[in-house]
Length: 68
Image (tube, rainbow, N blue to C red):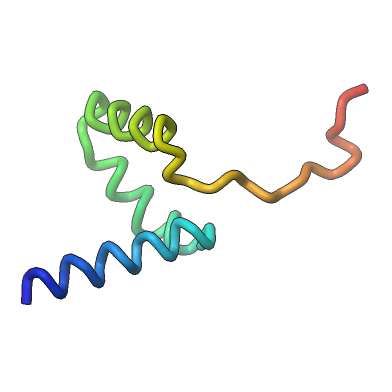
């Protein structure tokens, strides 16, 4: 039961991160990250950047924000 729960939780988290689900970030990921000690949060962020765990943002800024 622990194995199935762990795998399904990991799959759910992975799918939500891959799709960039804003509600997942706002309601689950950010509150968990804010409860971690700062050093642990920093190490996890560096690890995520090192292995490209989060997809690149597909959002483009509006033309009014583009500098010339």
